[in-house]
Length: 478
Image 1: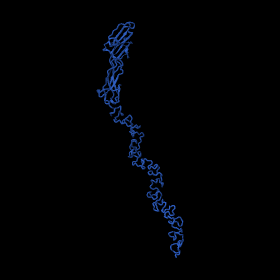
Image 2 (image 1 turned 90 degrees about the horizontal axis):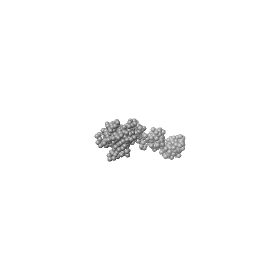
Image 3 (image 1 turned 45 degrees about the horizontal axis):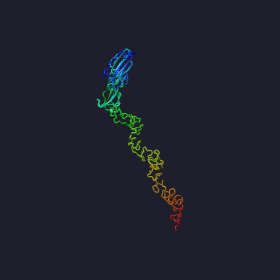
């Protein structure tokens, strides 16, 4: 062989049979400065395809040269002094070569020289198990022990979670996208069994080991036992098969502390299922108005109650306006508020009160306050306790404009209480003869006057015929 300054001593080596090719080698050059150059020769079967790395870097395909007539190719690569490794997914053979001016060495892979160990063990995953409780939406985690005979560090080991219909793996299938160390069962896994497969991978050497599967765990259950998978259960820790959710938030009523979402906790809310932030409770019965069917507790349901917030069991509605008297501010609907109305239940917009007793005439049973009820009073608006009715026409004298019913109004009648339509007043004293006791005004009453219509104060009656001379046309009676 050619050395750094001439020909080196010849060296020979035998390549191991192809069936003993390995996927990886760890080797070292002979140190101590004895050799000026070192080379690695890598031999591969031309029918194999793959990538071979030297110290982690790929050896380019262009570096390989066919060995004529053998079906193999070789790549010769300079090496720095020290330890090195090759790795591939296909078997290959190697020679390590050193050159000096008058010395050389060569040894094939699979031999040991100067403490150099060549190995090919794959990494191993052992004690693979699934930790955690198989509950919908609860994390399951893989546990395993990684090892490698040559001490190669663990690389990107891979994981695949699987689901089956029973504990022995019947109908086992891989769960899509479940390739991490942990997995949370979903609603589709409910009542099924779960496991994981671990494929150990080393950073160097023969990198990929044999996949190992853990025992199945299951069946996957539901946390609160209500038959609703935890990932869709609005109360995953509390049984609520009906999933009732009054306020439509993320929490079911069973685990929601404010079922109507009005800001008042259910324990203090007088309408826990109906929004009523102000907690109004008109009748104080413990049920807020928002959910109380009888807010005033008068025995009449609010929907039929004409005063839903005021007690009025009899539902009296004087003016028929739909608002009961108990809550109507104008019970007779006359435009006068009840507080100012002298007849709050009887229409009397004018508020007439004849006797000024505070009760309007419309509702006063004795409008003139004379102790005679209006229905029996012949002058209901004029005081006339005696009920005198001279002409008997039904209108008492106190309110009758023609007490004697002679067609002459009392104000013009010279005998207002005695009929005297002609208004004769012989003596012109203002009192008509019909009611004047001395028609001739001679100081002798008519009943004793022998001339009642002619003045004759001395009552002279010459012929004694009962007619005084003043009015007798035959005084001597001859």
